[in-house]
Each structure stands twice: as C-alpha cells, then as structure tokens.
Length: 306
Image (cartoon, rainbow, N blue to C red; front, side):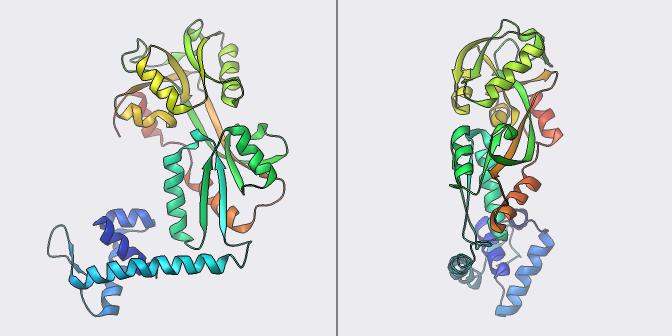
C-alpha cells in the first residue's frame, strides 16, 4: 500500500524529489518503489523518455483508482484503530495562534503519512483556553508559550523561538544591525494584551535592561500586529518565526535584539501519561518542530529571501 501511496503522490506532484521529501525518503527509494509497482502490474506506469515525465495510460488508471484505494485503506485503518483507544483514533491538539499554523499543518501531514490510521485534529485558541482544554481532557495536549507557568499541567519543551524587533521596511530602525534593549526606553511599541504571557515576559526583559517602553497599542493577534506594523511607524517585539514570511516578502524588517530574547514553546497536558497515539505525535513534534535553522535566522535578519 505504501508503494501505491508514493506513486499517487508522484503522479499528483509530477515530481520525484517533492514526493521523496513528502515521505522522508530518497529519490532513489521512490524510483525503486515505482519500479516494483511496474513489475507487479507488468507494464510501465511512467514515460521517462519525456521531460518532465508523463503518465502512461496504465499510469493514469493506477493513479486514479489507486488514490481511491489508498483513501479507503486509510479509512479502514482508522476504523480498526478506534477499537484500541490507546493506539488509535483521533489525536486532539489545541495550540495558541502563534504556534505556527503552517508548520503544524505540514508536520501533521507528514505524521499522518506514517500513521494514516490516526486522525490528528488541531484547533487554535488563546493560551488560557488551550491550558484549560489540556487540564480538562478536551484535548490530548496543548501547545503554548512559557509552558511551565500553567498550574496543574505537566510540560515538556518544544523549542526556543528567537524574538526580534519587528517594524515596517521604511521605519527608521529597519536597517539597524541590532537593537539594544536599553535603547527602546521611551519608544512607542505595539505590545501584547495583559493576559498573554508574552506581555509580562517582554516587559520584564525591557525593565531588566533599563528600558521603560511606551505601549501605544495592545493586541492579541499576530496578524493584526503585522498589519499595523506595515501601516504605521510603530515597532514591536515578536517571535521571528511568526513574521518570517513578511520579512522574506519585503514587507517587514527584523532587527536582532541585544541581549538576546527567546520565547520558550512547549507541550502541556494533564498530569499522568499521554496515551500512546498522542505520545507518538508529541514525540514527532519535538523531533521536527525545533528552532529555525541559524542560516534562516541570519537571512531574515539581513532581510534576504530564503
């Protein structure tokens, strides 16, 4: 079934390399899986004499019917797994909005390729709601910032996120090599609303470094932050990962802070152990949702595209 799944992805993506990346294997392994299918069916599924390759009539048929077979197999596997609540069924995750929606969706898709019998559902809520969902069992685990502050929950680290000064590309600070925290004294900033953990930690960081910033606006949504930064002369301290796309697109600038400031991200869950299916996804996240590569950070801070 996995060979058929890989072939269908090659057919859909029209790319060996992208299918290999999707499945976490080499292009050679993808080619071998398809060759095995061709031997099984006794006919060519791809016409490799053309660039890019095209599907043969048999390949078109296998792609169309195979996708339905894969979907039916996955549905069957999920139904069987529900009979064992420890290993199967639905893994429910609640996460804060700034946890990285694109990253989590990508990792969920990659995980479900390995465990198609599982249905991973991710909902996004404010931090307090995520913690409450984890505490009451409405989700298997939550993803929050500053995970150790939530009472009644166990936590494990996920990653440390670099914080930077974010501002519009025409802002007077946009071209600065770095921003010393003390130099933010008296400067107007957009800040997080009081109930968000980031608000307290950023303010403590500024005070500890001799700065008393003026918080001109308080917001609770990263997208609103980014829109306001593009439209005004304000700046804000944000996790670099949350506005990296805007830096690459030339819409916002990222200025490194001195001393460095990081936001810890973690997984929280009710006291006791996670059931096996949730534990597997939690481990997968900790292994694959780590900090940004240093090269990506450096390029973003220089305003370069990836």
